[in-house]
Image (cartoon, rainbow, N blue to C red; front, side, top):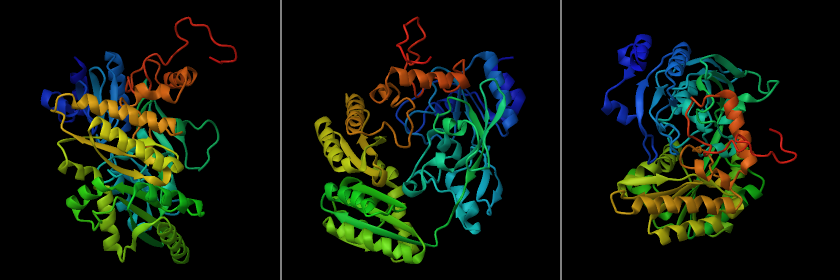
Length: 472
């Protein structure tokens, strides 16, 4: 028997894809790259995942874990013919505990479905990527995903208590636990954000967050991006951390308004969406601070959503930003970098300069509160030389952000996209340490090879002298 035959014997023919057209569909994610797929398999239990890994080991076939395929950095794209393990059928929500505010979920659970499931209990799952209506918890764990409301609550790693995971030899291990601060090495924290390179997560205990007693959503418009960015820093400098501080520039606002009719001012150069949550008295006080700061920074207008319907409409607009881009061009490339909040205005000026120089339509929407930029390039890939310009502009964007004291990624992960840019932030000893940690989990490089770390990261493998004071 071959690989496909063994997989069929394990899970049945209806859960194994072998036809070229099916495999083609699983060769990409929401990024702009593609890779070859040998087979796709859909396990429904931890035991099946463990057996699938053992089968892949026997054939020495690389394994690429996959959720909904909404990743934007190429993390779920195979490099070399690989077995894609789609975890979408492992979508159970169990052991919801409203007292301890936890739930056990499968990696295939849709992010938003979890909060819908627990709404009646007065709790929700806080990390809310813009793709939350379609992305999976497993994918969020792989990339340590964030979202508009992670400014105050923290990204995925802050909301994962325990992970069940299948290792490279097909064993099942548990990392972390229900206790908020378990003893020992924080291997749970190591795995969150490792992009499927250390194992396949098959179950997680997540932390749930109480639904706020009161919420106020503020829409402020500005004549310049600089004024809006300065207002963001000033709000936090006043001693409050809102639930969200989201910023869109004019091009993005126009696209969104045409797409969903959220009620945005399409004449504004910058649109700030701020939200404060908590007890009524505290929310009203914070609301006034946000309003005052925006007015001090020359806001054109500041308005508060009058009811839940208007609030939902405003957030629908913000979270529809990426879909709205389809009006602008047949293709898009969404980037993800981070800068210090105080450098937002300075870096945005350089972002627009890069867009002009490469003659690329650049639309911007970002989690301004934590400096997480999302420049979005709309383009036509059939235009000669366009993809080269897009990639060159993207590289410059990252270099500008890193030079300003920022980071490669805020929530989308490294994947293929930023793998070869890792040396901008990490020296050879940093990369070697990360490679060794990865090898401790997956010594044969079976899981998601070619991701996150550039070739040659193991810098002490080839008889090179080890510098004094460097432990290897």
